[in-house]
Structures are given as structure tokens and as C-alpha cells.
Length: 126
Ligand SMILES: [Zn+2]
Image 1 (cartoon, protein in one colour):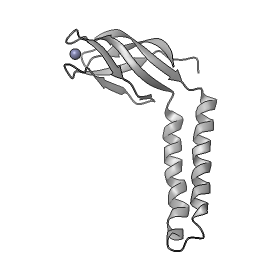
Image 2: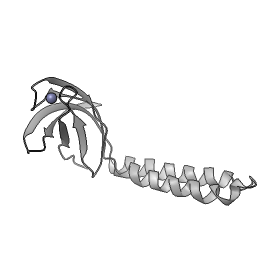
Image 3: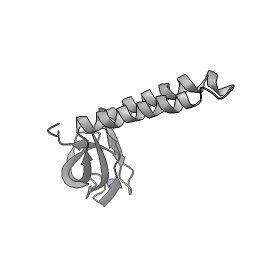
Image 4: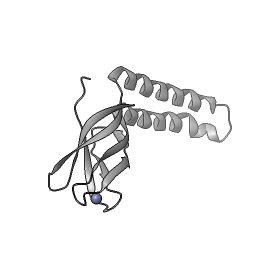
């Protein structure tokens, strides 16, 4: 993971600079992962076709679940590791675990005062 400058935004709009470990995923890497997940799900579902009873559900349910997981994985543009900075609310030094960055907001909490902070990543070239 590379260390990048990012920002945290409080609910009242205050922006705080932080440093975050970020592993960005290119669109081709995301498509490859998502495609692999879906194909894996189809193959796994097909493997249950000879199994009595389970063959009624698994061959379509597993590929369907794999499709939803693949669509979610495809939306993750970056994985965020440790976020380091100073809490805008209680001024404590923070070291928080991040998470996946997609088109949805990634909210983190200050470990000492529990203030919710929205993680903002600079837009990549992808
Ligand atoms: Zn705090």
C-alpha cells in the first residue's frame, strides 16, 4: 500500500488532512476480479448439478450470489489501510483502520471520542 494524503470531513463540514495507506485498483483490475468471482460462482453452482436435492437451488443461487458480490467488488476503487491524523473534535492523535472505498461514503470513527468522520480520497487518474 502506498501512503497518500487524504482528508476527513466532520458532519459540520470541517476538513482535516490525514495520511492514509491506500491501495488503488485500476478499472481493468476490478473487472478482472469481478469477472473471476462471477465465473467462479457459475462453476461452483454447476458443480452442484449432480447432487440430489441441492441441485434444485445451488446451480442458480450460487451464481446469483456471485454476481451480486462481483458487482460490489467492481465498485471498490481502493482499499484503505491505516489512517493517521489528528481528530478535529478532541485533538487526539488517531490511527484508524480504513476499509473499501466505493461510490458510497466511507465513515470512520475517532477511537477516543467516537466522532464520525467521512473519509475523502483524492480522485485518481483511473
Ligand atoms: Zn476524537
